[in-house]
Length: 551
Image (cartoon, rainbow, N blue to C red; front, side, top):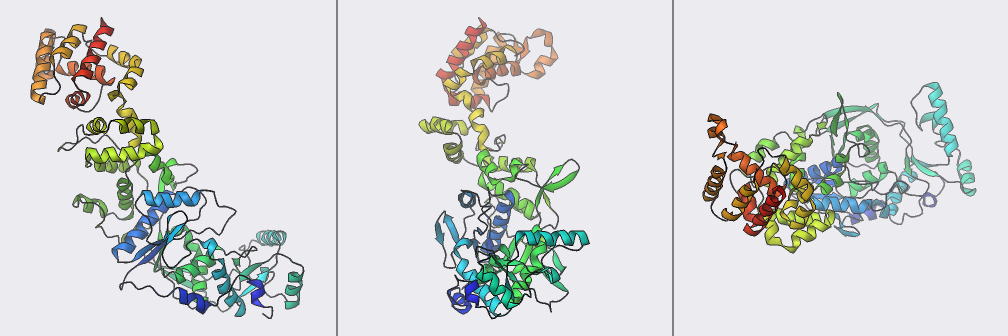
């Protein structure tokens, strides 16, 4: 092309050689993987993005390599305000912060940046200038109306759509027409001039899926848009080269773009990185499966897990079970945690992983059950500070009392496993706080009225006066049974069944009545531990008050 390429790429101030000198090969151990996560800031992070990041980061770290976060923000029309913050914060929340890229919004680490593609436009233009100089790219002045007309003609002729061959309106225009369009100030894009001598097929040696064959790219795709910014296809090829990416782990929806990407790598004389296309996370809809959708499924967004208060490790371990079927058995043998597990991309499934909320909750319950009361308190406090500020203030005002609440049925061989995420905690433990208990008095009365047999006022007063919850469990049980015996309760279900006419009820009926009075619920964690945490004065006050309701 006789037209000066610098006119078409005005922001390019360096040669390719100068740019590559600023991005030397990385000094890493042999076999080290360099991976990246390249989200577009178009909304909240999809759980699939967290899944990809986890796999990419773990693969890099287990090999002695590094993991990058690269914000692919060249499509400003689709960018959502605050989306970069959500991406960065989500990765940090789940312990997946990058080794290079933005650790906090606006603060980058690493010497291979900038890590926002919008800040790298001069670099992309330099590489496009090289293609222009070699006759492998050209300016295209086709208007939206002209492109629409091409699509209509292709559709009518029932041929594959696109900008190629005779449909590439500006591919072989005379230089004079190009110069005239420039002189008129018509907007233009820079398109790839797909080589005519390309092979019929290109092979993708996918790490997960094996060798896959595709028709070679014939499209004259846009490399630089009318505003001079790059398309995804150009930007990611250039960046993966300069940043030394060794493994591109991305969703299977990008499989069809591989021929173009391979072609671009080849035109610059670069060896492409290894590609691993992972399957999507899916869910059942009726009898069919579909990809999790942020529009339809709350659980598709990473923010759902943050707002619900799932422990970070529980979510990551669940995702690891989707990534590698060996993990679950491995984790059972390694109580210290997931960090020692090595991901093997070749073992990943080629079909979509089915999202299972029951499985996630089960893993989360196991992880929470293994936490100490102090760890639970700290985690709930951090969650509540953002998502339940009133509850946060309540438990922060008396850490010892709150920690004692969270210590009920914890730290023993049969630790409670009823808690899957923090969002249920404020409601679960509300009865421990006198003002919340008083506000719920109507429901407590209703629950007590439903207890059969109904406890007498005298029974409740006797328990209030005579039973000290601070004694050992056996002593506490003996005292309760003794009072129950005086009021006609059998000491056990077995004794009651032997002669039901001799008793008004059994010991389980008695403890149910006490539980309802103290908590407003027919089911709760261990009653003795609840009473110990509440303290004798609070227990007595509630039993005496309930006796007054009955009287």
